[in-house]
Figure 1: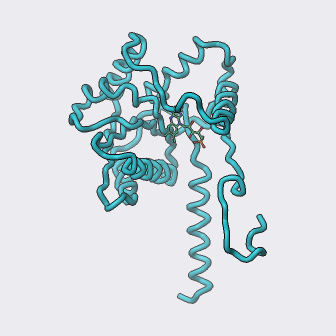
Figure 2: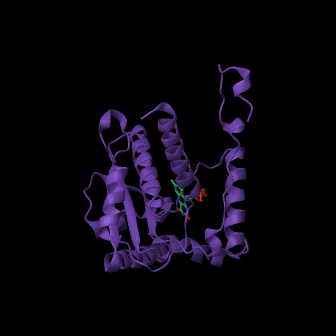
Figure 3: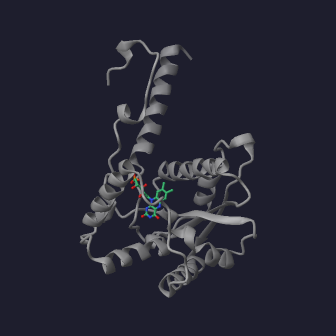
Length: 241
Ligand SMILES: Cc1cc2nc3c(=O)[nH]c(=O)nc-3n(C[C@H](O)[C@H](O)[C@H](O)COP(=O)(O)O)c2cc1C
């Protein structure tokens, strides 16, 4: 194969990967269409190619569907309504201003897409509860890690999860990563008979997204490259973007 053919092939691969990455969005409304077990297994198999420090592969994932998923969702909702689960504290308080501004921007876009007034606490709670039923997705995933590991290994779990989302999107399947499950570890662990050393880090909804649902139309913005990357040492002419 000559270089130009190889380069064209490489460009096509880059365009394909870029298109898959850019088309992935957190999806919060799904079609009822089920996912085949083989498809989910292929996605997880691809995802397990993720790198991990010293290749310890600390990820563990539980896949739930059908009545198992529904029963778990019912138990989570009951626990949430009983008020027995510790209030989530996913971010530090106070949250540094730069992050608070982005969080507020997220909230504004999210609730606007749902037609929920930000002051309507009851409507916000109802929407928040939809996390616990995997937003109606046919498949739910719960990601756990050994609680004895250090934050360093949670990076590996995150890389695995991103691989899951990209491998899914490459097959036309949508996802939503959800830290909302983390406070419910005890309920989840009891239902799925987890080992005592495991802790639920987050969950994920998976299925075919409903393209007509307004909540799936939000395009969350990203900061510009110049604002998050500092690139030094290249000749000046390569830095114009
Ligand atoms: C670790 C993590 C946890 C998240 N937890 C939730 C969640 O609990 N509920 C939810 O609706 N979205 C959750 N999200 C989705 C984010 O809100 C979403 O990724 C972000 O707003 C960017 O939008 P995009 O993924 O569509 O680009 C989470 C994302 C990540 C990476």
